Image (cartoon, rainbow, N blue to C red; front, side, top):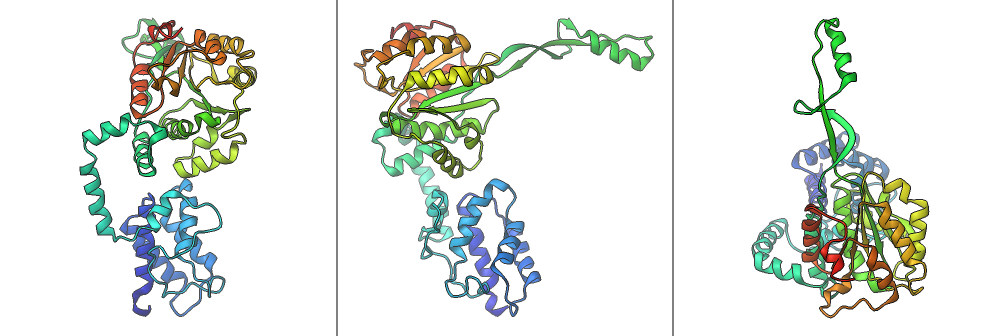
Length: 399
C-alpha cells in the first residue's frame, strides 16, 4: 500500500460518519481497511460499486443509517477524473472542499463535513459548549419564543426537544394479566395448570386488570400562521413517536395528512425530509372544520380506541369562519378521553377568544394551554402526567 493512504482516508471517513451521528468505532475502521485490502490490492483497480458495498457492509449496523452513509460516501470519496473507473488511494483529506450531492444533504452531515476544526478541537469545543450552557442559559432558552429564535438557538432548542418525553398516566383495561396479588381468579389458566398435576392439585392462578398507556393522537395545524411553531413541534413529536408506541400524528392546512409512518424513522433529518415530501399544503390556508370532519369520518374509529388522548395544535384562525367546526369538535371530544388544545396565541397576556373559530372550538376542549417555547412543552408533559378530569379549571377559565 503506497504510503498508507488507504487506512488514513478510511479513518477520516469514519470520523466524518461519527460526527454525523453514526456509531462507527475503531474496530470497524480496522475491519473496513482489511476488507478493502482483501477485495482489491493497491495495484488492482476497484469498481466504485464494490468499494461502496464493502464499506457499507462493515461500517453500517442499522438500515436507517444508510441515507446518511450514502450522502457522506458521495461527498467524501468524490474524484472527478476516476469516478467510474477506480477509487484513488491518494484522495486528499476531507475538510469541506467537496461539493454537495444533487439530492438535499442532511444537516447533520453538512455540519460534520464543513467544519474546519480538527477532532480534538471539536471535542474541546463541545466540552466548552456544555459548560457554557448552564442552568441560567437553559432557562433563558426555554422561555424564548420559537418565532424569535436565531438559527443557532433553534439548533440548540431542537437538541433539547429530542430529550423531552410526554408521559401519560396508566389506565386500567378490561384485559387481565397474571398477578399474585390480584383479586380475581383466572379460571381458564387455573384449569390448564391443574392438568400438569393430573387434576389432583388445583393451584389458583390470580389475575388483575392490565394497565397500559393510552394512545396519543396529535392533530397539528401547519398553516402559514403556525409555520414556526409547527416545525418545532414536529421535532418534539419525532422524539415522542420513537419513544413509545400507539402514537398517531396528523397535520392539516387545507387537507388532512397522516405522517405517522414518516415520523417513525429514527433519523430526525430523514424523518423530516419524508414529512416534507408527504405534505402538499404546508404554509397555506386553514380549513379546520373540513380537516376535522375528514378525521372523524376516516380515522377516528381506527386511532381513538382505548381512551385515547388527543392533542390539537392550532391557533384557531379558520379560513371558513368556524363553519361546521363546533359540530366536529363536539364529535371529536366525545370520541376521546381528553381533548387538549395547544394554542401559541396564549403567549399573549391579553388574548381574547374573539375569532369565530376559537369560540366554536373552546367549549369542547378539556385543557387550553400555550405552546410557543420549550417551557410550555415541559409544562405540557407535567400536566398530562398528572390526573386529568373533564371540564378542568384551565378550560373553564377561557370559556
